[in-house]
Image (cartoon, rainbow, N blue to C red; front, side):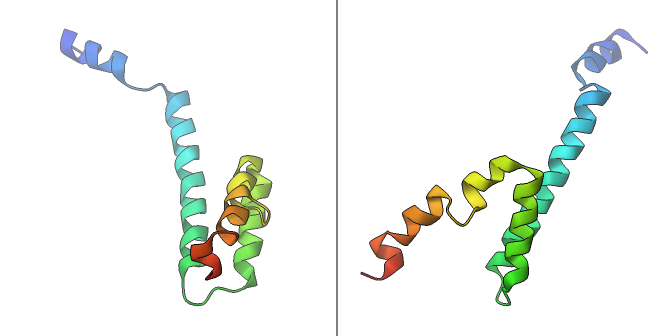
Length: 84
């Protein structure tokens, strides 16, 4: 390994960081698949089950996905959404 390679090696993420990045990517894929399912034409109650399982995995998601999430209540009272 020459000096240039050693300098580059110092910039590469550690194995621990790589594992964490893989885990985060997996979580994002889970959220994306549920989000896409919700946007599909054949939405059913199974999507709610998926959302609930996401919330169970990461409680922070409830801020955005729970039935009483602030964004849900804000949108439902919006004139654009309610049709007023």
